[in-house]
Length: 236
Image (cartoon, rainbow, N blue to C red):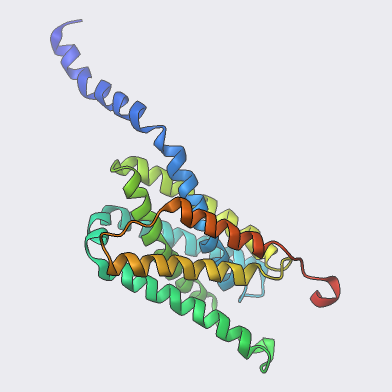
């Protein structure tokens, strides 16, 4: 083989070497996406449950998650700007705080109002809510993924797998919310935790909140969420 042929293969070989080096990071990014999507999945499941028809729930999730995937790709491309401008993280944190406050206020209102009053949102409104909510969560997961690796293709691969996992996880959570008493509240407490993390990071740019501590707290919240099942007489 002549030197010209070898030179033409150099970029390919360099690319293979680069992937060999960064490939071990892919499982880490996927796990990170799945773990960070637990509270996201509860929030999406809770929003989707407002559509009482199961087929409409699945349709809304499919459309909402598809839009979310496109928005996440945009976030990845603009990740450097998101990290640089704290207003983006601050806006996301305020939106997530709003979700949490609305949820706990709705629990209070449910004692005086009939449950049928909740069925007011159309499928289009649910889809928009799903997309916006996932977008707010994505700001946290994208900044976490970028902190692990600066290889865009690697992060995109992990993000796509994470979004697919989120779709099926949300489906499971829709069922689990009918079984476990504290799960929905636990999910929204976790949402509040993510909002607090984004809020602090947006105000103090130099602070680096340890993901290990964050995951431990998150796991504890969900252990409580799965701790008690709904009694049969309560569900009737």
